[in-house]
Every structure is written in structure tokens, then in C-alpha cells.
Amino acid sequence: MKFDLHTHSTASDGTLSPRNVWQCAVDQQLNLFALTDHDTLDGYLELSALSDVMYHDMSLISGIEVSSAYFSNSIHIVGLNVDVCHPSLLSLVTKLQQLRQQRAERMVSKLEKGLLLNGLYDRVLAHAGCKPWLLTRPHIARYLVEAGVVSNEAQAFKRWLAQGKKAYVHTDWPDYSDVVRVISESGGVSVLAHPLKYGKMTRTKIKAMLQAFARAGGHAVEVVYQQQSADDTRYLTRLCQQFGLHASGGSDYHGPHMPWSAVGKVPELPSECQPVWRLFN
Image 1: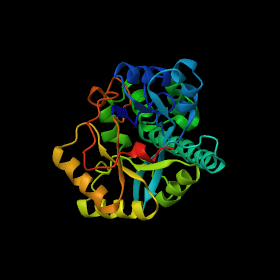
Image 2: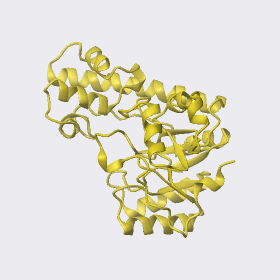
Image 3: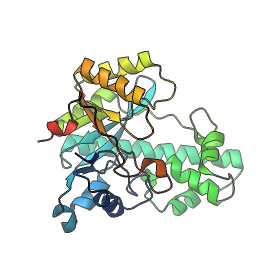
Image 4: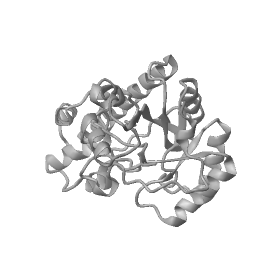
């Protein structure tokens, strides 16, 4: 089974259109593909409306990556095979987009004060070419590079946008258990995304997080993704087995500017794991 169940497009913070990300998946001859843009279903809806997508051998799975909170940690939960018209899910998406817009406005306001620049929000938004609630830190970082404030995006995060820096804004995302509940209500499968990439969480805390996720009704964990060691994969496999969770995986693709996370370049799931697609109706 060739799959990629975690990708992004211009519907959120990716650099390729939904159609072009889908074409990358076709070129890789995938069997299963999900576009999981941050806190929006727009990318999937755009793809699902294209007739050539529906008549292709590759299965398109509805998807979204939801921002949530596990105690003081910001974590991401991927919803797969969701009912994109379900009222609970649509209500959650509306709330998340409001939070995103408020966060973007506050971040740019802090940058204005720090850089002594007026009218920065309108310039950043115009440069991004997106709706206000879609404005993300990568969009802001790209503008700072274009404006010559920093030499590259990594520098923008290091100086201004990373957690603890001057323009960073903490957001009170919905609790992870509420997100799991909504995904379940919408008939979907909840997947804890890239569990080893949440800052400085120790292995003990990661184990506790997966246990709490399972107890809340979570379904699966991303066990495989690119640039992960074999030891890490074995560790996540053991936790999946311990807590009765299924296994998923994805590239977390955001565009060709990140060649280390290409669409479809996802390792095979360990044979000991139960694949997440067995939960799809």
C-alpha cells in the first residue's frame, strides 16, 4: 500500500495548489492520499469537485489537520475520512479560523512595534495573497525575507516568530479531547500527528500524551514520516501496541521548497501495526 495521509496546499500554508499537490500524489502512484490543510476543509473540497480526481485509481480521503492543546502544549490532530458537512466539525473549523485570524493580527502588531513599521498587516496579507484567517507564521516569514528584514525564513523564526520570541503569540486552542470528540462525531478517524516533534517533550510525557489520546477516543498515531530514525519508529510502534492505537503516516508536505518531505515519500508501516485505513468506512 502506497500512501500519504498528511499533506498541505495553498488552502493553508503550503505553496502548491490542491490540484498540484494531488498531481504529485498521482505521479508517485499512491493508493491512498489525503490533503490535510490546517484548520480548513477547503483544499479537500476543491479537489473533490474535480471530475478527473474522482475518476482516478488513487483514493482521495477527506482530511483536515486540527490545532489543539494538550495541557500547555500545542499539538496537531489529523482528522481523516470525516463528513465535511457535519455541523460539529464545521462549528469547530469556524472557531479555529477565528483564533487563527486573531493570532495573525497580534503577531503582526508585535512585529510593527519591534520593527517600527506602520501598515505592516496589510502588506503581509497582500504578499501572502490569502484570506486573513489563513495568514500563518510561514506567510509572515516569507514576507520578512522578501522585505529584506531577514535573510531566510529560518532566521525569521529564530529572531521573531518561534515560541518565546518577540512576535510569538500563544493561542488557546481547543482541548485535544474535544477535537477527538468532534472528529468522531463527524464519522472520522483522529490521528495524533508527528508525536515526536512537539518541542522539548520527554519520552515520558510523550507516552502519557499517547495514553491520554487513546483514553479520549483517539484512533491512531503517525508512526512513520520522513527524516525519522528506525529507533523512533520502533518506539512509536511499541506505544501503538501498548495503547491499542492504529498507525498512520504522511510526508507533512508543504511544497517543493522543503525537498526532504516530498509527497508520497513515506516509509512503509511496521508489520506489527494495524493500518489506519482499516478504520475507514
